[in-house]
Image (cartoon, rainbow, N blue to C red):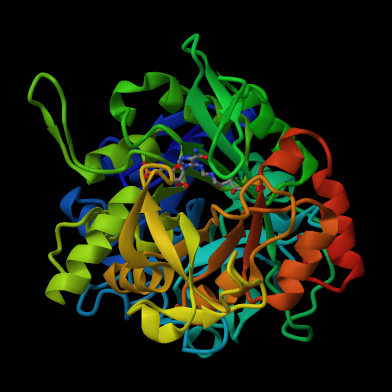
Length: 531
Ligand code: 1PR
């Protein structure tokens, strides 16, 4: 019996599913006494430092947690829970942590690396631990903007470190109390193994283990470029939810919605084939309200029971009033998605309207979907899906939008273009360019950009490097390159030619034209860091 400290923030469902997958039963903490009485406690930390600590304090859990840790009863903390062991964090000044460890958690310093760190990175083990039994140097999934610094770490507690611009503490352990900055529940088979080690024997240091070689800080770990499989989902004319795929966003073939498979089955296949992340886009979200679209929530629930890498879901995240007059905020919609198993949500149309308002007023309203969701769930959970198309001009003076000189001239030989944002699945162009959208959304609290390209979508002709470099240079958050992948070589090129942290494909994976393993092999041969 495993006790889970679920205080209602973020995707605790993944942890629950991972524990169930490993064959254990989960019991929830319902009162402060449960924290003290639990045989083995898992403390997942999702959301901002302040909201985690506030919630723990509100529920009366701070004192029992400190008491449990001090009396060396088994605890495994995940992500912000590791940070909560320290005295405080730059993320939420003035908010006291559990203060088991000295020092303040800091934001990653500005560097050429994007913040948040989103992706698969390695760990260096500083001592043997039963938790790492059977660990084979695999990369693990991290998603965070703040980190605990090595100089602050009490040597007695130091278990693993990881490099991302600097060397930070990615694992701590003392006796039966341990915490990881990475997410074992989202780190595929390697992560499930670590979680299983804890569930099996607690953190008991007296258990003899064959853990990997202790290397300390000798070698630098490197974050991998991610390969993302994307599933555009919608109901076909018979009302069945299917994975579809368009050509430049047109998903009908001879009048019928193309049907490329069942969402849960395909997602599971991609997980098993080595996808680093899976994205679902409810492509009719602009007209169908997701909270009434239970099948989509069910897809997410079922997928998260079987897929242990990050899941993103987009489509229809906005305010809505239903036919009974019930009002939903975009935060309500996102919360429903998170509760159903999403790790990140992606906002399309609503992000355009928000950015336009922000550019018009120059002010943050505090009420937009981006601001509200990132405030509660953290910016790393908010992805902006950009659906741009090229608008050619003869000279930059012809437009007030951010313009590039292009090597792919327009139909009349135009040498310049700007990237017009669209809403409603590419149906409506706005007076907003991709750079304006991406940089406004970053300022409002978004944590990642999913950069589609309508001109390239479904063409298999390769990614639009000009677009990717144009947007990438305007933001400091990670960018996922999307649209146009036709071969493994296209993935190699996009990572060599642009700074994109991840590359996404749909059609070639659905049609089994290029297996994910072939993409990974090509990347590895080209010296691109992969998981
Ligand atoms: O506006 O917040 O409701 O979100 C709607 C979401 O649905 C947006 O993220 C938007 O990109 C997406 N969407 C809407 N209509 C379509 C469509 O195709 N008709 N799909 C659509 C977007 C684009 C990609 C695709 C890549 C890779 N899909 O994500 O998977 O282009 O394809 P490829 O590798 O086959 O070239 P909201």
